[in-house]
Image (cartoon, rainbow, N blue to C red; front, side, top):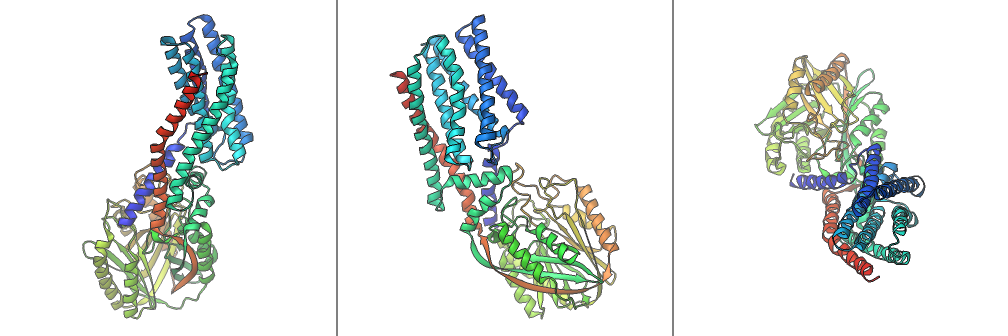
Length: 606
């Protein structure tokens, strides 16, 4: 649990950094701010120096010229120079220019103020220093965020500042100051200093990654950015594949058949992470869809007993598991009896169990306390206890259905083991009888990934043994607010379902999408509870109407040689992003102060 908290904190830092980079206004607002900055800046800076109607007219033409040239070259950069870059559409290109003008006009206004108080030449000198600052900024930003060729990145970096200096040159020529030869010499020198300082800055940042993981920081930064901004998972997964290790992955399947396949519960020993569409984050919903399509029945994929140590490295590894599960799911169902559902709680942990033929289906929760990832050690313990009781197969689920602060799961392990033994003993002692199964899925249209609802929606599997109806509710989300589980179970009792448990899939498809402390919304944090419960009731009623006498079978399979990335490596990746940002803070002042000093000295002595 400590590792889980540490990794979550590291991911939260990454989300914070990347979200701050591209939270931008609309293109219309960017254009408005650009117009205000360019025309307003041109007018203000000129009127301060030349408080006359002529100064007003020249200031307007200067500002309008800057705006027009800026818009033309932003369009050229976006549509022509970086036309295949997924990051730099016209809006983001214009937004970068807006930030550049904010920086440039800061220098211009300081220069104009200095010109009024000290020496008139400082207006020009500070404007040229602002040009250099913008040039350095664009060189760093494009080289750090774009995946285009160096030739195109260089062109995109230089076009805007060099084109926008032209109106200033025309304006300065009109007042016969300064000599054009001095300005041209400065532009050449500025270009050299900008290249050197931006290269030094980027090289030092890359060294952080090389020392930590063996590859440069900025390619990883670009991969994160492509995922954050435009949902491209492949670039980041290439890094995960390099860091991953091969491991055999176990999965358990409980399949119910009646006159046709009725339902299937699949529990893979894979953690659905790390976030968004990267690695195995979407595995619960994609595996659910594949099984549903293969068997033409309702499928669900609750969370197993494991954590981030078993995140898959890519969608390719996802598909390996899906293909294997689908290939093996068409097995015969032969057992026609099940025990009633049993629930045992000792005040801290709750275990649920139901025996189908010679197979056990168990689940654990610490609700209403936080129930996060449970240790694999608990699964090994269940395996031994199941064998002692002559059970041929078992599937164990972490209900993952309550979040309210933090709990050290390792400290609760002995409690979980004790409640597991008690629950198993009671379950195997119960008399088995014929049973019925019904299942249904509802996909709530108004709940999105940002609300905490994954593509798999809400699935309810109802088991009727004798007069007892039990509902297994599986919600495709990452955990659930404390107390909602109890509300759902109470609502199910009102429609005749006496027992049951609520699971979430722990899908990380909902992670790294919203700017919250966790980086995601657990089920019920922003959803309307009554609406959510109405969907659960709808699925449960549909499952009840679908009840048929059924047979069951359980199977455990192994998928060999699947690449996973451990929690430690994943945390290192996340920490690398944070360390790179911290390194940037440390080196930005000395590098660019040195550049500013060199440029100022050049301006002073030319």
